[in-house]
Image 1 (tube, one colour):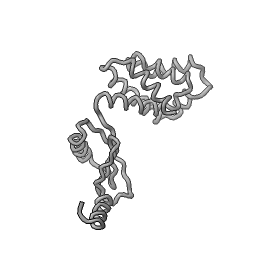
Image 2 (cartoon, helix red, strand yellow):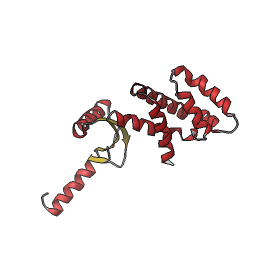
Image 3 (cartoon, helix red, strand yellow):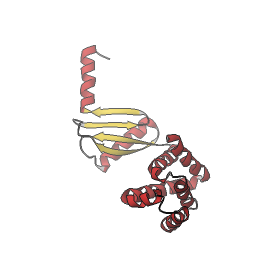
Image 4 (cartoon, helix red, strand yellow):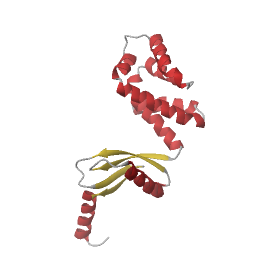
Length: 178
């Protein structure tokens, strides 16, 4: 099923010029927030109660003011193909394509307490040096962490958690020096 989401995301991505991709990324994130904030709107677009023409008109009223040529037709196509209820996955794949094209890595910073913006920015800057890419992190509070931070980005895990440090110390003590 993931290939289907990627196919829709790739189709939209290929229609756009480099200058338009960021605008569409922002717009799709806005649509995703709308669907999340008003699940009844997404349910209406997913249902068979409204015909395709009514769905297109509704989408036009809501999203035409953004002034993005392909946005409403794209959303209408997802409705027509009964994929609009998977919009979140399509948006995620599109954002990944845009980020990849701009050399941006997205990741997650797990911590025992919510990180401040300054802390998150500092971790992103440190990872930028290691990865040679822009890094954008989302902070997730993990009460199972004793302390410190564990970051997953670019297919790698950087474990600076207290548990990770203790495990590394135990390995060193068991196996000698490394």
